[in-house]
Length: 111
Length: 137
Ligand SMILES: [Zn+2]
Image 1 (cartoon, each protein chain N blue to C red):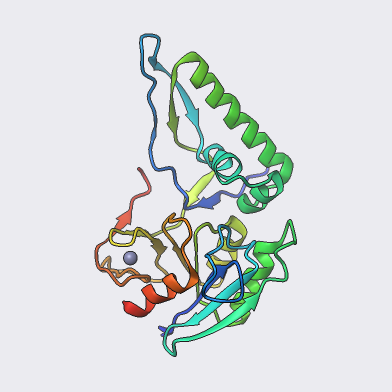
Image 2 (image 1 turned 90 degrees about the vertical axis):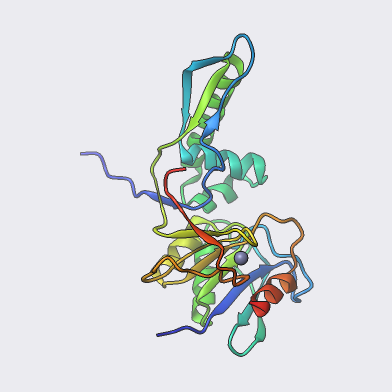
């Protein structure tokens, strides 16, 4: 059974110091955090300007990178659909304004 | 035969079941029923400030469908405000994900994949103080 969580967190820039994006699919970057190895990678969202299909495309890209948890404030239906098809867990962050990528990672680390 | 419409899954459920008017002319007998989809269109467009296109993508509906749902929602809310009617949020072409939990420690919500024995931990903060969200509010 696969217990290793690889978590995608949408952030406004290529650093953990940036805020978590309001919308998952429209985020310019994603932190990809490997919970077991505690490693951080970044994925650029080349689809954020794709007005109709960004959710679908970015979800598939994240799945291809081994992500099995999507974590964000607001996750649209297209992303939810890909998540369901690929057995991806969804975490909805509280509606705290200005939450940083690092804050989320620190919460996961401290568990 | 009409083509069946795929139900849309939502998890951004409304926080309350509805709204009650106050004052002399308030009527708790007349009720406006706002569907969950209609509520969602208001939340995305007016509360989150998304464009028509972004909202339609978020709800996985076409732009004309989104416009129709949104217009209907606006009309219903206007009627309730101006005529002092109560609003109940319920129904619509939506189903909720099977098992969602809310963490009482960090307020995050999460779903569970596969089998669950209801002794879940929050995947974010690790708290065991989590409760299953019921489909009915
Ligand atoms: Zn928690």
